[in-house]
Length: 363
Image (cartoon, rainbow, N blue to C red; front, side, top):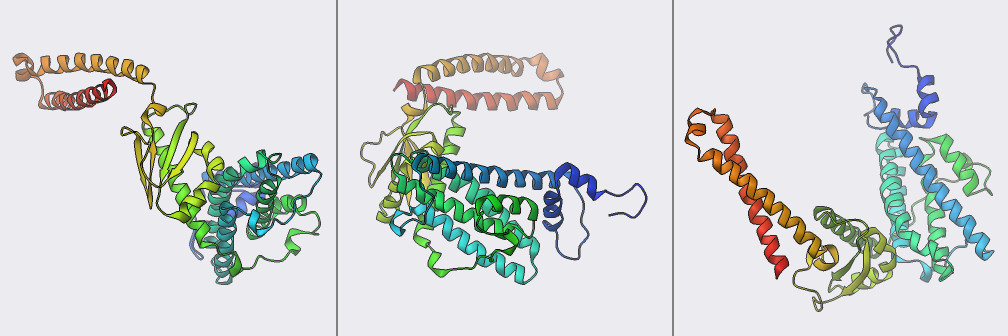
């Protein structure tokens, strides 16, 4: 902070606008000890957004725990080992590694590195992946209570330990959430620090879920590149020969379908039954296919391509007319001629692609 009058930033104003936790997190992250630090309001906003993310995820978990209690009259209990799905073991294993790494970083006073790991874990792996993959079981608790209980227990357990790791950096929001999540304990700051447990390492389940994440990303990217509407669902075929992966994928079928806008997920060892024009996505240890007819309304696409073909014909006629005009070629600046030649090349390539696409649809 500058000492010059009127040239500093009042931390109380920042706290009133963004919250004390957001300012505290901002000042700890993204800077090496002993270095000067530039202050950006955008970074404080990002910290506030992270606090909101933690708060909303916690509300979702506690709301569904309450609803499960109202429906069944049963509290969330520690599930049998057999009831934990690969995705549950994956997040527990990721948390276990996080505990070890963060504890080591804090022992060496690497506070910024430690909180960045906590931030990435909560935002990406816990909120963006695990909560989304757990929703199917939670919403179908009436059909399989054991599966829903396992998901809710995992959510509560992981959130509680994640709050402990985050507490030194964001004490107020974490204390408020923890007091409701674990009412039996007097205070979060009086609770025990999480400890690494080798028994909670699950490399097999980590491998399965990391493959599923690659598949989901691949399907999403393919749909985005083809401009497939979100409302349009498609079958997704996963072809893999690895028995362990196939079995793991089977347990996640219903959970992962909404993340890919899939109407059905079919897991098999060969390409049997998959059409030749299916869109393919290469992933580690396997391949993913989506039937083209599930992604595209062929008649609608044909009409769109015909309109595009007509537009390109007009553009090509205009560009060729200019480049074949001796008067234009003799008087126009070189930059203008080069610009029109570049357009000719671009429109020619686009026309070839449109005509190839039309030919494939006619077939």
